[in-house]
Image 1: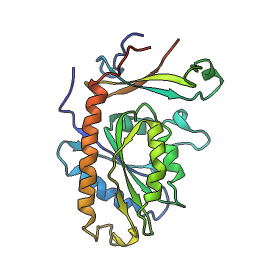
Image 2: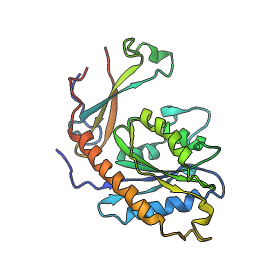
Image 3: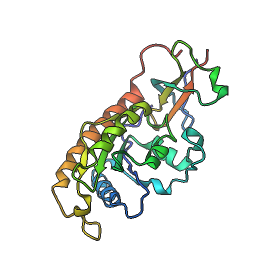
Image 4: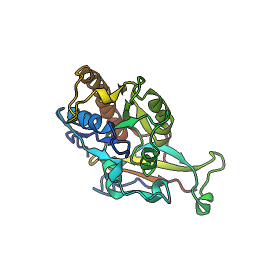
Length: 59
Length: 194
């Protein structure tokens, strides 16, 4: 996946965590990683402005 | 690019909506103690003022103002009274409305009770919730036992012994907030993005 740019200031963000989240509805079910038992999301923070963001790992 | 001079933001969350709540003077006291510290900004967030519906839950009901405050926060102080040995349901409802905003941020709890145990049970009950939200709990707490005796009728603290306890609590919280901010913003998770 491409590096994530801060949605607020455009600075490259730092990927500091991964979080496994539970599916909420049927549309989420396809995103579940069967090996992990949930949906994997990456957690980012911006070194310039402190903005935080998550994005779903696809594939 | 980095911004090392950005002040820490440590809001205080008043975790009850009950009328006559004695946690409110506690929250005001702690927020005042945070505000006295250089390089730290704070805000008192009253969950009673967050417009969250109760016919849904989780991030689907995220309030933009509360979410922005959680995004800006480097650490949280939660003022949690103990109701029937647990925390307020509406506190959990508010906390559950965010997720990415909390990950790798510090949290400390001030327990409040009318009885002798100072909210220790509500604090213990909150710890697994924090873990799932990605918050990092410090090992100092503040416990207000018999809170109805701790303040006068105008909300002024009567027992000065609480002040050094709050100081120790905040020192630990600030250290953890600085450390985690550095980690969030500058230390990458090992391995390539998947």
